[in-house]
Length: 290
Ligand code: GLU
Image (cartoon, rainbow, N blue to C red; front, side):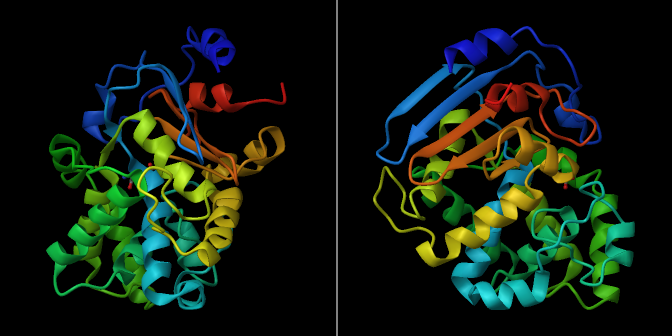
């Protein structure tokens, strides 16, 4: 881990996400790596205290929660699991794909997955999601209000996706309410160790290695990992599978978490992204095959 950290620390390729104004001004030099094993050994280096926004990595855990509530089959029927071959926020994918939703890890499919979460009102659904993420991390997580506000003020694209899904009857609650809850889930703050712990819960067949709680049903974990392998790094997923080969998920906040089933998880944080929206240094930091 130290070797990878030293090797890539000075890399300045890529740039911060700037379509969410808050993310554009995050210190792009930050770089942190954490490994958490299924028996909760923690190894970390670099920027381990900064809470960055989880962004798209949240999609994995909302998928897990939807499966807890509805079962894997119903989630598969309502969302599907096909690669889109397009950008994470693609409108044409919604129009052209037979399922319209694509898969739970692109924006359209993720917003539809959020719309599946049951609750008496928006607040109830949101609290349930935040509580579920906190249980996966083994400690209380919170919303970064500045990220939420910045993203909520600029999320016309996601609102458009939600209305398009409504046209195809592939969103299952009020479209704008679902986008708002989705925007909140993307704005949850995690440091790199908390993110690795969330990953370690998946690596440990759904059981949190710190609290011992079975957060995700073990039978659902293979569906989650296969979806991550297929679409966790968007259009970079095939290259990632070739070069790294671990189920993983990236977020435009600069985080990537990769799962080593039965052993643990590796989380890397660095804000500069490549064209596909994946952190450049986090990908390098994970790369073990040259
Ligand atoms: N909140 C971001 C969006 O909806 C998440 C995208 C990502 O992390 O890739 O655009």
